[in-house]
Image (cartoon, rainbow, N blue to C red; front, side, top):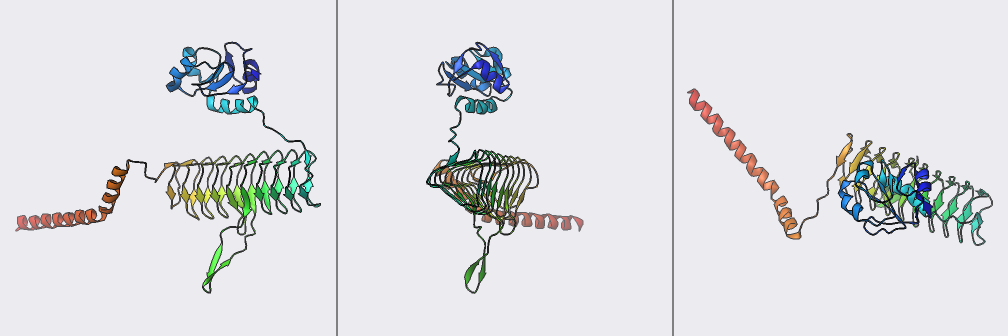
Length: 348
């Protein structure tokens, strides 16, 4: 629980209403009650705000005159709501120490404030910095480093030569540093290429459940500071992702592609290898990226949902485009020939 006075102070927001009112939970504007904190981002929620029974609401300044009740005014209500969520429900931090069932190599360096859960395996040369949390059943391979305050949830697999920066969060089932998909065809079979580049991940990177980041072939795969990765993303060897880029679930990124800073990539996109995507590019969900993008902006190639009958008709028509193109070309040539004949006739 927290009073609006305390909440406003922590968030740097002005409070309108009763500063001593206490909230204890977060809730949507439509269902929030007297002990709940909610938020709205714009005027399209004005009716819901007027009818809400929320104990307090974070609003933009433009809605202040029309809003009843207890209010906190923010230039970015959604961002303020995100910060408030951590104040109302503090994260559970396990006690420092090494569980009796964990296997920690004697050459590993574990800070006294780190926490290692049940049935973990920590390899030689591993460094776990201050306040690192390693959940149950995690493995950390040789010569990997986990930076200060980072957390591995249960069942994370980190291979050797992986560096994870400070204040990172890695969800269950994620795999960092797995062998890249590198093979050479020779003598009627595939010959695997040794992958020795490792993975380099910056600070404040969030990695979703069952996401895989392959190690580099020679140089490391790089994820820069502030990147957020959703669940079930595949990042191939030697990919480089720039600062504060956000990638939604089920995206596949092929090897050696470079993605710039502040990009947003929608769910289920596929990006082929050896491309460069510049800074501040947004790619719509389910798009196929087959060429480099050198100009910032929004891009998309996925076909939006239609009723099945309409989609079938559109698909059939797409198959007729080639014949239609040939007929148009033929008509153009015939028109040009007729025009040329008319010119010759007038000249004579």
